[in-house]
Length: 476
Ligand code: HEM
Image 1 (cartoon, rainbow, N blue to C red):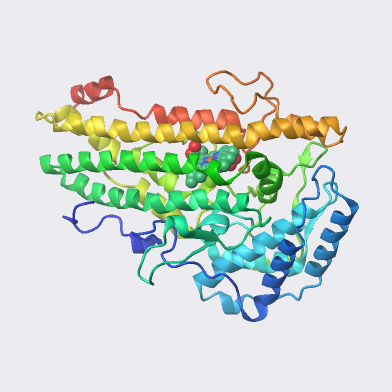
Image 2: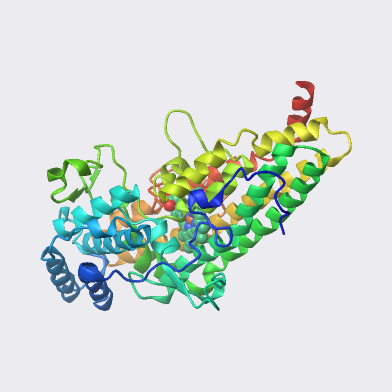
């Protein structure tokens, strides 16, 4: 348990919509349904789920399934255009509205046949853009829609924290237990990570004090942090218990795709998403030409970003914003501010560890450095595990899907095999996968293999070597 504060708190959770018990997840379960005039959105969402709509580019989709999707989309086009004014006063209602509208929108877009234009009908596009504007979020499904604000639990009382093993998802695309297991594995990581946030808070206080006692405390916090990050790794690997890789890849993942990972490419360009009627609203001018609409990805989890920022793992690169920076655009506004605040810490942990271990005589600095390296190593091992999961859930199933498409002689086979010129799920990540750079893309639109290897290397490079500490002591 983290010791009581010795200083006024440099990282005030409540300002950033962070809860000391549940971290970036709200302490109380999010509301499960909008009432009043917005019931119609909820009913249409329910209807989409009951119909078991299928993605329009699914291999072997039947005429009956296409017809069923078209009937549902016709209902969406006939919806009245509802005002969001009475929602705008409540963050809780707005979050549910973002969730419902993005689920409706992704159902609408991804049930379209792959070769028709994407025009999001006005009854969804306008409230979607309005809600997104008030929340300062992009009009696309995010990690907060599928995980942070998409759960309920049977808590023992109003004051008890949600039980990580008693969680259920409120809304899914497929009603498959695999989809729910996928969301809940992230939710459990968020809940377990709340203790890591408390450690960051207490550590920042100790860094300000900076004396021998502070160094001892900080050392023990970092050792606790190592244990927590190791637990996050175990929780991540546990996704295998409830979510089948092929079901995830073929049935669940297609619904998350953003504009930048659309499967249909014409004249070298992916389909643009047209938000019908947006041009008539000058105050909704939030879709510049260089807009980017990536699909939901756990890369948007503020928890992992917070660990990077706190431990000093630097993903930034000159000239272009990094993937990690881009993903922050998809996080709830206050959580983005939290990361910003953490990154502007005037005494960053890594610098403090370097200076303490190079100047302190007593050996406390050396123990601090060792504890710091163990925490960084745990994060690197989390990323090793994440690469195994990405291989198992994307690379293996993508290969099997491409083989299946080829055997059906389906015109989409070329697209699917472009996705995968790689090895199978027992991939050896230390080998170059393929000289062909046509890469598998993540839902966040990245070149998956290259990207994940880069993130892991940068984590490893954050470890403090003896020379670095020596260099710091010589330059004091
Ligand atoms: C079946 C489970 C998972 C799969 C298949 C998966 C896949 C991916 C993929 C493809 C990327 C590349 C970026 C993109 O384009 O989206 C990515 C990035 C990322 N994912 Fe996951 N992911 C899974 C679970 C998780 C979980 C549970 C977390 C943590 C809550 C997580 C955290 C991240 C982070 C932080 C990144 C950014 C890169 C990094 O920091 O290493 N992922 N993931």
